[in-house]
Image 1: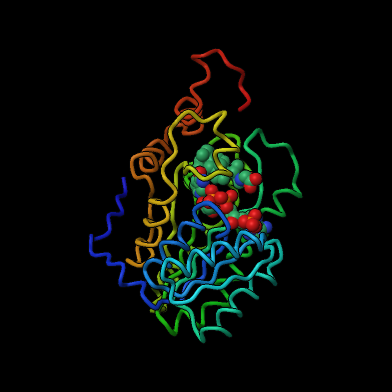
Image 2: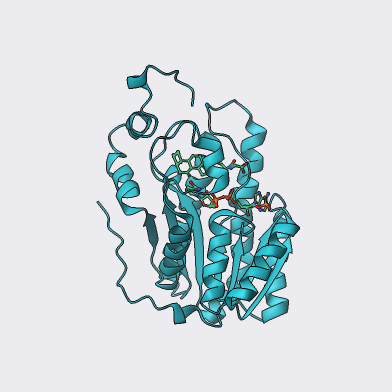
Length: 277
Ligand SMILES: NC(=O)C1=CN([C@@H]2O[C@H](COP(=O)(O)OP(=O)(O)OC[C@H]3O[C@@H](n4cnc5c(N)ncnc54)[C@H](OP(=O)(O)O)[C@@H]3O)[C@@H](O)[C@H]2O)C=CC1
Ligand SMILES: C[C@H](CCC(=O)NCC(=O)O)[C@H]1CC[C@H]2[C@@H]3C(=O)C[C@@H]4C[C@H](O)CC[C@]4(C)[C@H]3CC[C@]12C
């Protein structure tokens, strides 16, 4: 069992004046990360598709004390847009300290429906855009000896049922960024890569998608967002949040986690309910 317990020397001053991109920041965990960073006095550049929501997030960041706050709206289905976001940071700040890759495209929580094009599109949005932003940002991150924070899921470590397309994109993140971290260590590239393995979090979209099927209580998005920032600032290799659930899932990985996950999460057989979520 691997415990990633970072030394408790995080200080919010570590983020003051830092230049940070947060993707998927118009709602959910990304929105909360933007607010924490603003409170800590960072420069924030937030991105998502919905301009009206981003405008409100930027206004709130300014109220909370951000050193500066701005947004770029567009879809990460297009890797050219992903690169454009990083270029905006370079043009605005002349550099970058932390890249938080957080956005995800719409998917479903149900049996795999055979739609290969959906998986192709989700790989563009959830994986290739992360790679494209990393490639474009790397010169600046090498200059600042900064951090790449990749937001993933237990679905990208201990696969379970009903999220096959989404899970595939999360496993791709682990494969790519954990391999890249090895190369950085070999080449003495002082850019940290933090992979965040999250359990169920109480964001509106997630709860709307699965609360009918999942019986465990979700964890708070505000605390989750702060833990992600803390783990990135401490240059941890991985964050497991909440530790109790995620480490438990990893423990079960060798023991048919899909089956145990069904029992643990859905608790359906006892109640005689149907099989589909
Ligand atoms: N909530 C949970 O239970 C869990 C979440 N996670 C991970 O945490 C991260 C955030 O999840 P959560 O906060 O719940 O997600 P939300 O659905 O709340 O937020 C997703 C964000 O991504 C943006 N987005 C959606 N589609 C696109 C697109 N095509 N291009 C650019 N941006 C897009 C949305 O804004 P807009 O629609 O305006 O574009 C929104 O800002 C994800 O990586 C997810 O995998 C991991 C485990 C559990
Ligand atoms: C179904 C969600 C995919 C994104 C989405 O479509 N949101 C609604 C919208 O945009 O309209 C999944 C996003 C996070 C997933 C959850 C997660 O990652 C943690 C658990 C992993 C486990 O393997 C299955 C249950 C999860 C709670 C999982 C469920 C599906 C998501 C909510």
